[in-house]
Amino acid sequence: MNVAIAIGGNHILGIFNRKYLGMRHTKQTFMTAFALFSLFFGAGNLILPPFLGFQASSEWIWVTFGFAISAVIIPILAIYGHARLQGTLTDFAKKISPSIALVYAVAIYLIAISLPSPRTASVTYEMAIAPYFELSSLWFSCLYFALVLLFALNRSKILELIGKFLTPILVILLVIIIAIGLFAEHSAYSISQSVSPFTEGILEGYQTFDAIGGVVVGGVIVVSFALQGKYGYEEKKKMIGKAGLYAGFGLFTIYAGLIAIGAFYSGMFTGETRTELLTYLGIETLGNVGTSFLAVAVGLACFTTAVGIVTGTADFFKGILGNSRLVYSVTAVLGCAIGIAVGQFNVAYIIDIALPALMIIYPLTIILILLNAIPQQFASPLVFRIVALITVLFSLPDFLGFIVESEALTSIRNTIPLGNQNMGWVLPAFLAFILANLLHRTKKAP
Image (tube, rainbow, N blue to C red):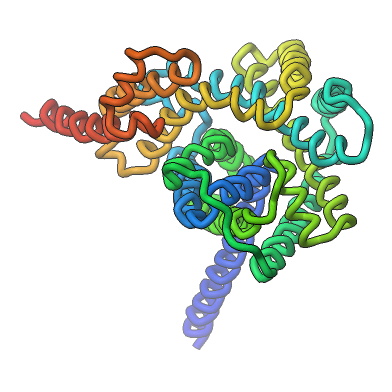
């Protein structure tokens, strides 16, 4: 009997432990999903979907699908890739070569500190400052990044606390705006300004920087799990993968809703900019008081994003240059100086100047994400090198097309499939992937 009781007791204890472990995993998964959603859901992203819907008008469903590919699916695949690698940002490109992986990581951080970080100041100025105060964009940019530098040099938990409250508040406000906007009465759609809605949705998704964010944020999540020291490789892989799916569903829901109401109000909006449209939608659904509250929340969210980018970039360069505190401080100062120089311009201008950089770095990032997400037998170092090289080569016409205009360049883009849609790298990269795998298998064959 004692033996039977012991066996029964162990069985019951085993069931309890499995249930407890399952509950702990579920809680950790949802906490990670919320963290991912918060990290991806930058305030700058709010201004892109509504305007995309406004321009597409009755074609808004197609731009939604396109936007979802580059702003949701690819970033979430980046998280899945990190769940498999469980390394750092440089590990994403290490199969090409360690030196190229380092160059790629440096390029990512330089772009982050030069474009999305200053854009947070511009969004804040247009939504939360210009409508209420007489202050020049230059003076505001100086004040904004002086505060960013102060927080970056003197790390504080205040931003963490603000972030925990800001994301739920923003989400609640957006859900209200979307719900009211979807069920309110609308005038007829305006004439669609989109020539190729699906492709335009993909390219606009570049401007969220979420694929780039995915390869950076995924590393942060992996490090956070490693510091806990409670989970094995398979447990972390499963939880991070599930968390990515949950976060992706949340992002898609918000983005689709914002695109839809941007399209529904396309026949009523008479402004010209992305921030004006978001403000207009806020007034139509929340009223002036609610819109003011939204503007403040967006401004604070932008600020925390800027501090995160500057701090993360400074940490990266500090890490690769001997953990020098001086390197951290100098990088933070330079990052804020760049922020002041670029952040004083309007959002539309910053989006325009970002395009050339995105045309070269985003395709490469997408390819690295996909290669790290697929089964390893199809992603050997040889495949990485060939596909990455072809992707960069066929991205060059898209990159140069935003810098110079020439008949030769136009002729090249006309020759490449999807070249005129700034997607000329897609088919060559796919063919390179197939040929590289065939070559790899030929080399392995006896």
